[in-house]
Length: 271
Image (cartoon, rainbow, N blue to C red; front, side, top):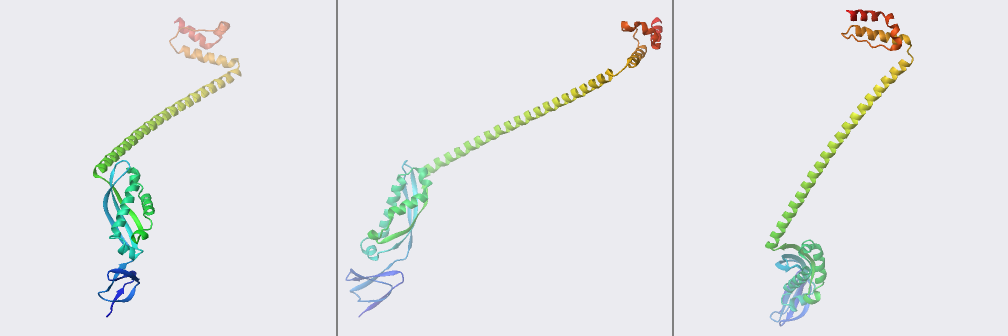
């Protein structure tokens, strides 16, 4: 009397005769002798596994919690089933051991910022576990490295202090820059004013020099009639004023009487 059993796709059938492994069957329909034989199905498909959080100590004695997920599949069904009581748990312990060793050589800040590096080192350390556990780790990932509560609080305080320090420095730099710009603007305004005043003074000096040069040029070409006319104008102005003092060059004192305006001045003085 024979019984049959179907080994599903991507599974391996392990035939046991009187409790002892005898051979392997691939996917398909297989017959066996009941009571004397049995067929165990072992899945060869990839499986996910999440390792519970556990403590890891860094090189600077910081306690952090590590969370790891991985994917594995059975590569040797016979070793997986018969040579280890629990190949998956053995693999998990191996992963945890290597992770402790890798992180234990790093300081806290380095470990927290090096999850990619840790993933690579961990994958290389584990390697192919076929010969030992009959399984292979296809992918491993550090999901989270979380410092303990006390360390996290200390880090938060340090972060806050750093932010306040940066803000204080930025504020001081802003005030210094504002003072610098204000001083520069004031100096620029003073310089512009000084330049404008200097330019105005120069313009006035140029105008005065031009006036003097023009007068001198005119006087250079003037004859005696011009000066006589100027004298007459001066005496006219003097006759209309309350002054009774006349100053005349000694060279022309004999000609004073020839000026009609002089007679008027003399008459006014005699009165």
